[in-house]
Structure formats: C-alpha cells, structure tokens
Length: 355
Ligand SMILES: *Cc1c(COP(=O)(O)O)cnc(C)c1O
Image (cartoon, rainbow, N blue to C red; front, side, top):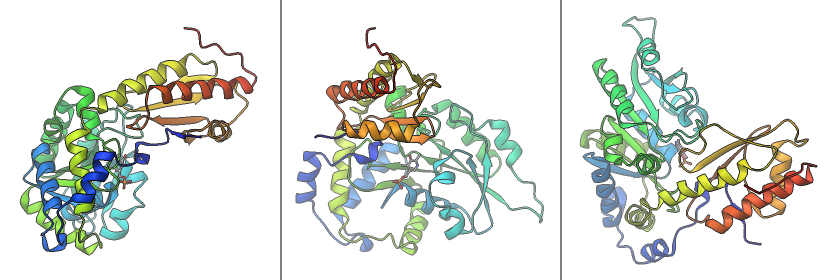
C-alpha cells in the first residue's frame, strides 16, 4: 500500500532531478571552501534572500543555533516567542551550548510578537540583569498554524530592534511558503533581518540541509561556530546539488501545496466530528480537532488512519496537523478525506460527503 504521509513536509524524498544532480555534482572539500557546488548554493541562497553571504548547514536547528551563538555572548538574552520552534523543539541548544538565556514573549495567534511586548522585554542597563541582544521571529510560524508574517510587520520589528541596538534573527524554515502565499519576495521578507535561515529539506524537497544567510562578517563568524559544533562537512556538494535544484525548481510550485491544503481542509470540514481551526490553512498546514461526540483520542484515530495508509501528525490529545507537500497529489488529498470519513463513521458517526 502506497502511504499518504501528511505528518510533515520533512518526509519529502528527493525528486528525480535532485537525484540526477547529486550524482553528477562537482565536488571539493568544503571545510577548505573548495566545494564548487556548496559555494554555488550559498551564493544563490544569499542572492535570493538579499544578503551578502550564505552558509550551508546540516539542519534548520543548526542554522538557528549557529546564528544565535554568532550574535550572542554567554549570558546574553535572546527574545523568542513562547511557541517558537527554537524555544520548543531545538533541545535547548542555545542555552546548553551557547549559554544564551532565553526570554519568552507571548506569540499572538497570528504568529507575531506584539511590538509593545518586545519593547517591554528589553532589559535596562542594570548589572543584576542579562543583556538583551537579539529578537527572533519565525516565518511561517509552525505552531501558530503555518501562518505567514508580513513584510510590514517584519520591518516594524526590525526597526524596533535596531533602534535599541538589538539584532533580528529570522527563523525562515518555510520562508518561501510565506513568500508564495503572500505574493511577495523572500528577499523582502528577510530584508529587515540581520540573519535568516531557511530549510531546503521541507517543502522544497531536498534530502538534507538549510542555509543561513547574513552579512559577510556575520557568516565568517558563523563559519567558525559551525566548525565548533562539528558541522564542517567535506564533499557536501552531493547535498548542496539537491539544494540548488530545490531553489531552481520547487519554490513556485509551493502554491500547489497551499491549494491542496485548502482542498483538504474543505473536504475535512464536511465530515461530522471534525472541527477545522478558524482560518486554517494559511499555507501548507491544516490544523483540526475532534469534536466532543467522537469517543476516540487523536492517537487512536491516527492509528486507524494509518491502517488505511494515511499518516497524520498528532499535536494534542484531540488535535492533528496535516501538511501537504510535493508528494501529495489530488488523489492523495481525496483518499485522506475518505479515510477520515471512514474512520469517524466507524466511531458511530453518521457522515455525508455531500456538499
Ligand atoms: C523544521 C523547523 C526548523 C528546523 O528543523 P530541522 O528539523 O532541524 O531542519 C526550524 N524552525 C522551524 C519553524 C521549523 O519548522
């Protein structure tokens, strides 16, 4: 049985064009700066994000870690949303490995941090307190439903941060989803940020890697920290080759993932027992919950869906996240909707897919 894997866009396998590019990539030792394919990817990424330089890293987690360690000294404070990926899902690396103190600012439902809350979070010059050094934003915002932050908002945070001597880091793991969804360039979304990371291995389909971009001076520092963390890779061009294909071929098509997420949401919304989040989806993530009448927990429903070949993300006792991507076509969307309808009917619900 062909699996329909909606757990994440990280499950995407490389495309045939990527596998071909990986086979024929020109290679060298990237720790010496001599891998032409890595160099090309870094230059492409930096140009697309409007920054001077780029650094290929093993993961989005490593990109955020390297960036925050490059910007902050031990004991400095970094402001993160309380639902930020860096706060929740990066194993506390900035604190464990960099001695960076994190300060949580409430994420609003639209993924933003209120400007006043950022302002209020900036520490006064006082020997008792850590030094506030950095603000980090996330676009699209994963835990807030894949919602995209606007150019205007990002600019406002950049202006505020810079006016107070802080740096702005942007966790743009899915920045191209944010750009495509809003009809703006990733360059404009990244412009206010001093550093930005994005993932090649999510909706863009590459097997491994992220790129961190920023000024030449910043990237030189980041390069040393990547080495400290054990992230200096040798003939990494085999991976970067897939990343180049990702940037050349797989950005515009993210609009298809967003359209399929909307179809998926519309189909699921018609099934009794399913409650879609308001405004979901914003991009390629559909968030939904089970209504009270359903006698199962999300884990149990996920198991029954898996028996029907449909894999979904469980993100709460009665809550799911479904992510569309390159390998989810129209038929997979229909099958996923049907599987939910079948499973919830098994739960004793009457169901009708009629519009
Ligand atoms: C996926 C993700 C990352 C990094 O994830 P890796 O699995 O380490 O590549 C960082 N931030 C956000 C918002 C993400 O969704």
